[in-house]
Amino acid sequence: MQKFSRAALLKALIPGLVLSLSMTGCKDPNAGKSTDASGNGSTTTSTAAVQDTTGDTINVGQYASLTGETSTFGVESNAGLTFAVDEINAAGGIEVGGKKMLVKVETQDDQSKADEAKTIAVKYAGDAKIVAVIGEVASSRSKTAAPEFQRAGIPMISPSSTNPDVTKVGDHIFRVCFIDPFQGYVMAKFATEELKLKKVAILRDPSQDYSVGLADVFKEEFTKMGGEIVADASYNAKDSDFRSQLGQIKTAAADGIFIPGYYNEVGTIARQAKELSITVPLMGGDGWDSEKLVEGAGGPGKALEGAYFSTHYSKDSKDQKVQDFVKAFTAKTGKAPASLVAQGYDAMMILADAIKRAGSIERKKVRDALAQTKDYVAVTGKITIDENRNANKSAVVLQISGAEFKYVKTVDPK
Ligand code: PHE
Figure 1 (spheres, rainbow, N blue to C red):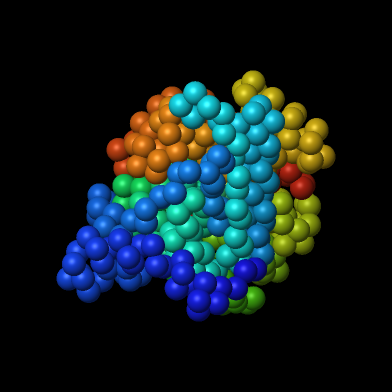
Figure 2 (cartoon, rainbow, N blue to C red; figure 1 turned 90 degrees about the vertical axis):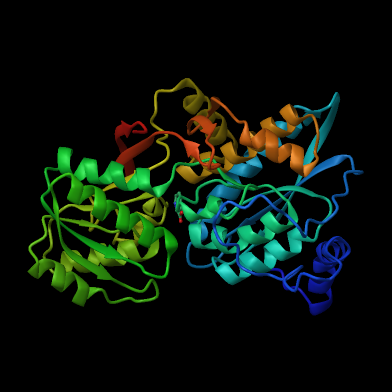
């Protein structure tokens, strides 16, 4: 991980600071400071740095969890982004107003920490060369960093943060995935219609925006569909003992458990549920989508065997675009692309498409072109960016079978 000295931080802050002072005549006490955006989709970027468009490369910043608690998210997303950039550059780059320009990506590791994500965002926000930023995977980290990009007028694209609040930060914040109100609906519908569950327990992590948002929506939708939430327990991601919550759930006689957490703790929770002889179906969302998930649950065929989760893509899709992508990525890396690889790839490709349509690397023009993305045929589905800068697209439900995630069904947007 990269450490920033005071001097480097200050230097990074200066372009925004200088411009805001000259624009406001020093009247705004908050100018240039890192205050929280209010989530009202504001359209102002008063402290925007002056962009330097003189170089001959398209400079893209990426921030990702390459290490730490949810490292598989950042590593996979980065693999997809890198694959996209290699493909773009091998073809000579992106055509920008008649001239081809190569893409250059700078990547910073936030160690799966929200405060690191913010530090990186401050640095990128002060970098006049940056055209756009891709990141983060996890919602809490995207939400913490986004106000910096909004203030600087830099378009940010999250490949996979699903909490609704992320893009509410402002008109420069985009995502290429669906949001949790849809994902919660998908799993509530699956629990009700396919698994015929009536009394479900929830186990959530209050420290993650993603977990709280998804738990709430599932609760609302499942209840609306006639089901009952018989327990709603909380845990801390750093905990290693979930037995008392699981004991509660057992006493409540739940016929299914919804765990909207990240893969690390889900594995442990599943193992302890098994130890307590809990045999009801376990369900989750895209936060389960990691190659480390099954390992954490004791290995293939163990505590998570048969469990279901919703996510963004299945490598088993018969779609030609998916098949071509799976083939090319596997040939290059020796490994089939996970969902986050496909999402990282799509995020970069959608940015490339927007730059091409904008015919410019000017941030504002790229932002406007991103907002107009319509029916873009991506690996993870057809993407149209809606008025709230979210992608309207379908979800898939997968089932854990051995070390594999088997495709069960696709659910289209309501
Ligand atoms: N949707 C999760 C979040 O917003 C992140 C995630 C996406 C994790 C896809 C795994 C796969 O926090």
